[in-house]
Length: 474
Image (cartoon, rainbow, N blue to C red):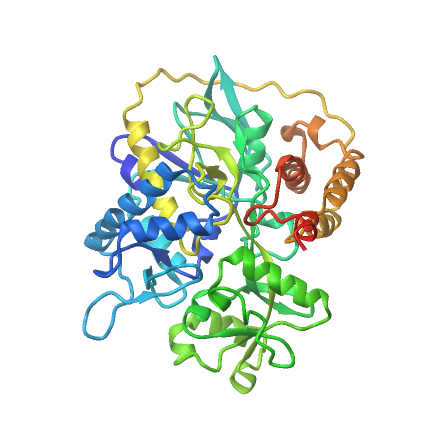
């Protein structure tokens, strides 16, 4: 989006980490698009709707699958390099719940890093503010007028005045201790919006990826779904095929696979990805190979990778229209922080990078059409500091995994909300909190929103799975 605005607008990018710290940089699986002659936007649309359990907004899905390929072609024309067959054509991979090979990769399993780095290299007229965290949206006269930020190195706070503010903060994966998300992804954008009364939607729908590298019950990164697309299967310590008999087996939608693995693990089994049928594994998956070697996983000898499900992607978030606009004038939201219901109740694999391209394009178009307004310096009055009572991050993560995770029950959700009541995160001003305290307050607020939304959902749907509903159909 910034690449499209930089020549007509004064663009400032604020990030609390460095330029490389984001979920987009970590994306392994690739980017989905119907560019193969045997594929079609209609087929991609149906796969997206089916994976999302038809909770998707149909117009948003049509926009994704029709505009997305055009934007990828434009990237290729600008010099972005995707993997190709030796004779020249683009190489398309297969992932769960896709009916066609339509996943583009770059540098094997390092698509996110390649694509994000390429786009950042096109930024010639923007101001980067790194190691700077957003504390509060500045709202005046019923519109977003800027952001109160804090420079982490000095503690200095200032208001960045703007006639357009875009949230592109990612999701909330670090609410859980077992997650694929970058360390900086802590629900900040959702919390910023929620505190100003910006409309949120679909907060019950958190996607848990089936295959995270698991060593001694600790997570060490994602094991891309593309490996299963290349022939790997999920097994236990006895080589039992866990997904045998399930429709689409190992390439079933992520919510289905994650639940089966969770149930299998609860029975005392270990979980592995058997890669013995994957040809040229190290060549095709250099990023995963390097990570396995880093953590001394003997996959060359065993043909197994130890895995378990973990938090991956937030389908819900700040309610956004097809132009990425929110309920607060002059505030836009793109990518995972936003929800225009393109992903429905369960995101289809490799649609996330595509959504970033499409929603970024639509936001840029909308901002360029917006009437200019005069900007003037602003100050924000911070209320007096209160005593701070927040849970330790590890305690919050453990409780969230148990009560808001792959499987939920209504009593658990109710108990979680009662547990949260002892903390005063909702009464604290962000400007009075340290960086660590703000992270915990934001995640508390996000967890409250998830639990409340989950209780309000009438039945299990996609990634929101209530155990009582399953028992009722037994």
